[in-house]
Image 1 (tube, rainbow, N blue to C red):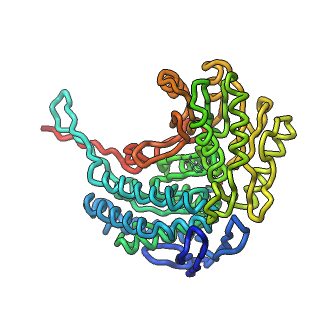
Image 2: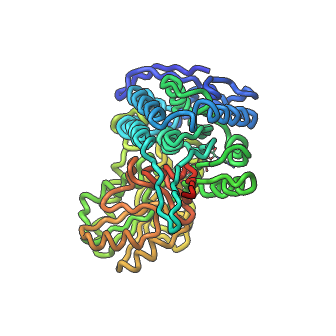
Image 3: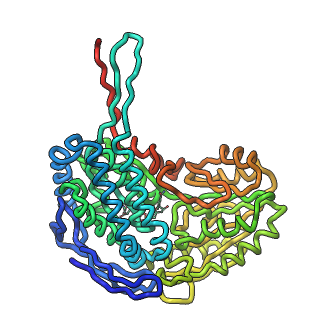
Length: 494
Ligand code: NAD
């Protein structure tokens, strides 16, 4: 059950420890079926720990515990300022454990340690504080009516929420759901990816230390087909928030519809465009464009993977991007010189290499990378293609690896048509020195977020989510509060 290790690297010198059992009703337990899974370090392919895997019976037990907590120690039984206090305390605990949480993230998911330590985990604490601040400020309205009744609204917790997250930024994507759900008074059953449960389990232990009542937070690492499906089909779960692939998103919505019509938030895949206009500051744009493409080896739903370059700067910019791709250093997450780590698994490696081979076979021009990196672990070279035939899978599908496609454009209307010609609509990027161009293009793009002169860098205060096959509903910002509350109207005849 307990995983402990001393790690001595150039960047992190310390020990990490985590209880690798399920966290259910305030206690760590091996679960009804005592199933376990072997976890591997994706940078080396070596075994790191055995972790418990939940079963459908554990889901039922967690939902019972969550309902019991709602009726006694949480929900409307605890004041909003008291919830805020617990969340602030939890943020402090996360902050104190930043190095350990970042090291666990690196070991388990391959995430670059300095990026986890400098960005992801601080952002986890920032999200907890942001929503702690909202806990006692999400007020209703009083409403004037023509017949003079007193009408007012209340934002009430939905109840028990099922939260399902993927493996790419395990704790950060978890907190985007957990923080607003708890701030608004819900109880949660969280399913991390079976591949990357360690930081969610460490976080569960911190919620215990912070003093959250048992049952409010339950963490059940498990497989999608069993635990994931059970959460989406459960009759006593009132809401599911899901981050993952579009294919599974469809299954989530279907299960929600067939069971109790639970509410659903879907954060799905992307194939986000990046448009570079001829007036862009190229020296500034190049690092933004390649960061968007290659950070975490492309395992980011917001990656800017379709790059449209104006014909006047095409021959200047392309060699700069190729050089930046070659210079984008891969390495073990603890290597302080590495800019990106490995893919998560052999399956993802095979999938990404399959796309690269399909691109070559379709006749696209390979400008950089195009193969597995020459080292142990699941590394793929930063890869760029140009002259991609219309409809080729590298130009349409979300690859979730370090693969970008470059294309030339002439006019603004032409590039808008190209950028919007995608099943997805998560983010989009525009590089230009003109405020007019930026505002016009940002308005015309079919995307949940548009970023001007920067890659998709998210923050707690600003809502984030998709359109089209990238899903619906919003995380982050004030908008996320509505995803976890029922808006009740009260009318009083006066
Ligand atoms: P995935 O869809 O395979 O899995 C996501 C989660 O869903 C995992 O926890 C998995 O166990 C679970 N799951 C699988 N089958 C399920 C089912 N039938 N019912 C319920 N849950 C089930 O995705 P992945 O491969 O883990 O992650 C990569 C995908 O996630 C990419 O498509 C990426 O774009 C997307 N993603 C989106 C965002 C976003 O915010 N939009 C962020 C990160 C990742």
